Length: 246
Ligand SMILES: N[C@@H](CCC(=O)N[C@@H](CS)C(=O)NCC(=O)O)C(=O)O
Image (cartoon, rainbow, N blue to C red; front, top):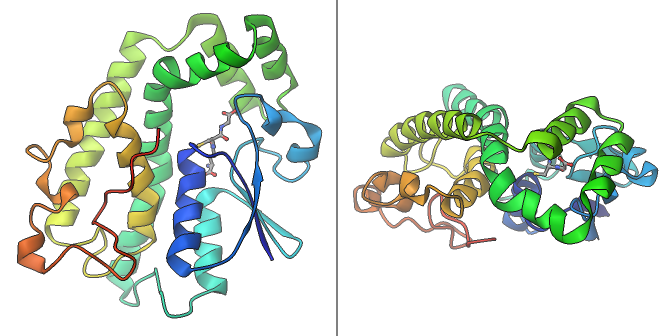
């Protein structure tokens, strides 16, 4: 039995849900409301000491970190939908982009999501004092101190501009990769596409959706699909696009 602890709009949770869907695996859902700070509760941090989603429990084996979970699912369920290329170079490209999805995409998408989305959701649920108390309860200082600073001063315009500039550079790199694709790591849909798709999807609902407009970055939306054949895979994936999730 696979049990996934996740939050519906969390981009890291989306990565794992996409992988489970792609592999056609059944899983049990444990929804963790991160805007009610359920992820800071001892019952959850006993499973995930980093106090973030997702967490996967596979028959008592508990895994944290979306990228680790993706690789684990591929190792344990390689079946007929392999999501890791055989070729060592393509595999290294895949790993680079899985890494980019966390190190570059997620971090900066998180910065750009705060004022627009996260702060509003938290304000709807809890008073400022309750949010501060929750931050103090979080056992992971990286998350706790970040939230505390954001509750005190928000995310500045400079910080947001810097994050958008980094995302722009990352998207340039992804566009180049996809031009040689049709997928990020070459001819096959891999964990790299799964890891990046929710990040691109999130950028679409932030304040600068023009960053991923088809005129600007045609490969992302399948503009070059005719050169490579139809941009549809076994589960009707359309290149890097995923359904719009708010
Ligand atoms: N490196 C982790 C990052 C997980 C992460 O930051 N998840 C976010 C949601 S996408 C979260 O749980 N945030 C809760 C919080 O900051 O309190 C992973 O890839 O799983």
